[in-house]
Length: 345
Image (cartoon, rainbow, N blue to C red; front, top):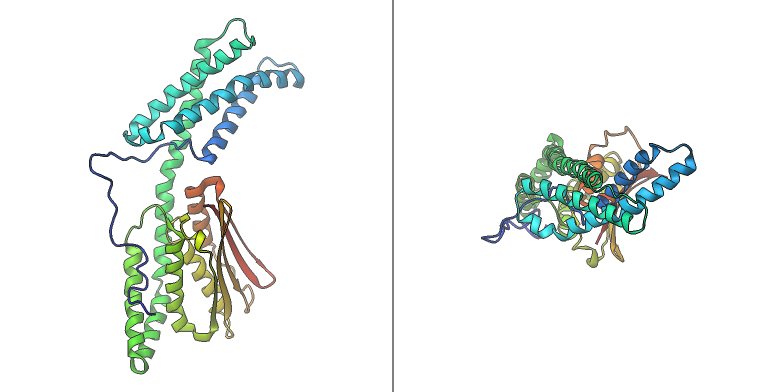
């Protein structure tokens, strides 16, 4: 506890957008791999259902699906490419402008699909109006779906943050921390003062809004200082090992992602055991991916299973920020509980 501002890992300053530049949250971000995958699968599903009409047998259905895919797939990729290219321009417009832009691009993509099929001689009488209407309808459904997903980010993050707030200020944590400080008042008053300052900074950190994402380095700093407080409480029962890769520190994570995993390790590994437990936190960059692991031994056995709120919140927030490119795995095996997170660098 060398630093009295031990839990102030996020800067107090807030970054405001430059004057004269209007910023907005995108309703849909077509540059995200998850959005591309969902859009392609959705359009292909619609084409597969549409190919069933007028098909007398599976072979005829496959032929019609191949023909529709020849026009729909390039058109969908064109829609995604244009939407991704206009990302920064859309960011300067209001949210209400995102919907009509996506719909217009859909109609244009439908016309492009019809033109492609006409160019290869797949149809003698190109259905221009029907193709434009189909592209428009599909884009409407896509934009609405992506818009609903974007709206879901706020309540999910709010729920996770409220749950995290409750976990951090639960009475027994506050009670035990104060008891640790009281025990140090006479023997080591300087450490007692530092611990109380750490506790004050803990609450100050929880009550401020760090934004949508923070760096892994900031999350590690918070976890280190949280464990410093718990070290006073558990002493040699808490044995912490760190294996950190500096190249992984800049990766972006949802705020308060690592700390609840560390807190779970202390709660379910160290606290129930008289002998304590080992906690290991590691990070490693592998190419364009970063792996983060939190491992703790469970000497007292699995015990009563928890509700998994913290793990569910971590998994949800990770999915909202990194979508299909992020992965989360957790499980108990041979007396060791392991959490592994992988995110794009």
